Length: 401
Image (cartoon, rainbow, N blue to C red; front, side):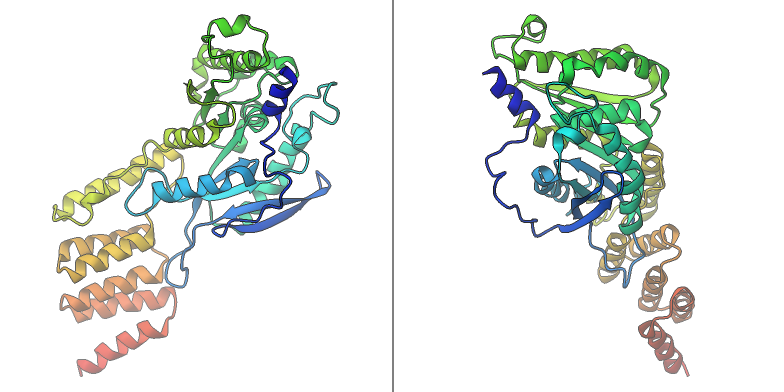
């Protein structure tokens, strides 16, 4: 029984593992050849679609997930639910699912003599740092905010990266990590690393499943030698060490899920972890369409993005297409103050977008100021020449002769 539990803790579920997996329709396949690992690595990618014909190229935080093919679909669905249709619980994100070639080799920080070929996580980390992260940044519209998520051995890899290479990512999710690996060797260096490093602006979420005997509590488990108890006890020891070194500025949280087991926890752990990281992201979008004062709404929006940028550590902007739609919505409703507000904010946040000036021109045309309309259309043309915008200028010019 102990060998069976060890297998379940170290290896992903094997039910469909022998069946060829197809990439789900909302993602796209990608790959990178690693000179460091001497192999081709398959990736599952989701990148939010934006029509850059009209809008400035955006940027999105990036969620890197180990055992990517196993968690890709649920993370995409979660992100869609919490970042669309007025829900601002989290931002739209790029998801990078990292699939496995040799899981035992890549995700274990030390070599266990009982597990030949293990202990290659430093080499895998080098692949992440020198090859994968630069590749994703060069090909996709990334913002300077990275999240690293892993479960089981993947969670062990996340913890090892946090304490040894904290600069690689901004936030880390370890879902029921296999801290017990190689007689919990990783715990021997945790105290020193947590004490002597500054984790300012780093976030960490630790999820602990109920892997031990149900008759035990979190104190009794430390005296039990069953495999599940060793697994849980090692994670609890990690949590104690994190509490002990509270002066290192690490912003962290953990939760013990007494109704979830090792293989049921990843979904809820990733949900809770992402909500923890983006707890300041929520915005009352229901105020957008109502008739509240435009000046008050401007203050609310500007203050919100200033605070969010400070919290995230980079300049966070609204979605240009969203404010563009809101501007035209209020224009159609003759809510001119609010229409102008959203068009003006878009110009302030996206001064290099031709669309923002074009839209402002449409606003002034409808409100009866053709001279200002032409002025904004000419600013739009100065950013990027578009025949349809030039036609507007010519049409107004001919109408005023």
